Image 1 (cartoon, rainbow, N blue to C red):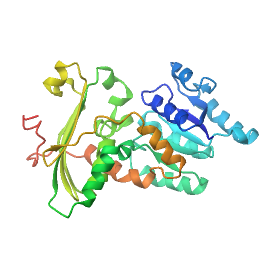
Image 2 (tube, helix red, strand yellow):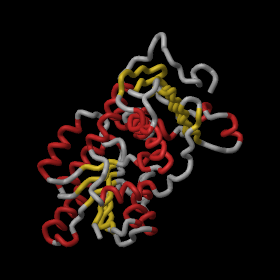
Image 3 (cartoon, rainbow, N blue to C red):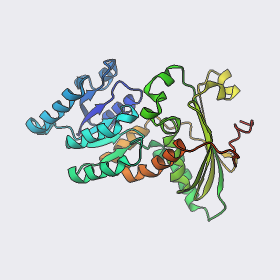
Image 4 (spheres, rainbow, N blue to C red):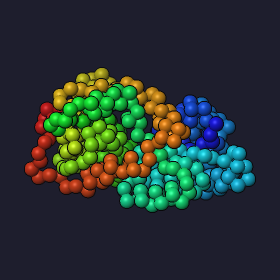
Length: 316
């Protein structure tokens, strides 16, 4: 049984990590969050030590390591806001623990080099959560694509619309300096998926760049991808709104829909199983999608765009 600590236990994604820690037969020793609405701990690890002070949390981990090595934390799960990931990964490695960090690993890819240097110095590993790579339907799709003979680039259309209220733009998620913007905050795992399926980036062009929606095209080694991301409820298909839905996710390849709406329940647990087996997704795995999103974030919208997403054409 391994000992875990978790940073950001009051956040949206934390329950998935708590479940993964429990379901892999491990235990949570300590948790940190500046907010104390963390009753979720009672459902998983009611005996875990809880801290609202970063300094006390860090000191607790260090004290365990020195005075009670049998209780020392071996893994730190990082579920904090994006702009804090780099700092919290460093805390984990300095505490002689491996890090398991939610995506994005960092906001700016140039921070990865210093994290790799710290990995080498401490002998501990930085892992990130790229759970779509472990989705059974998407794993089967990748195997199918790899078995196909060489052909022209596939025509891929990615659409992800997820309703967010006014709070979103007031919170850290709406602050590009803290979240990395829309392409980073809600798009990073999809961009990683596309790179995993279709190969490296050859060209990227942005067609729309607003705080609540973005669109563009990216040419990959084996696909041209037209993508659209939005947190504006008005972009949801009428059928979704009528039925009370709040999100729409679609991936088509040469006009054929890829179905992966189910099977998400245990993906974080599968990520943890990989990490515990020494097969987690590391820094170099995360790098290509981080570099692509950096390009997207800093690109000017094309004046005469080529390859518009269907929604921008008025056909979404």
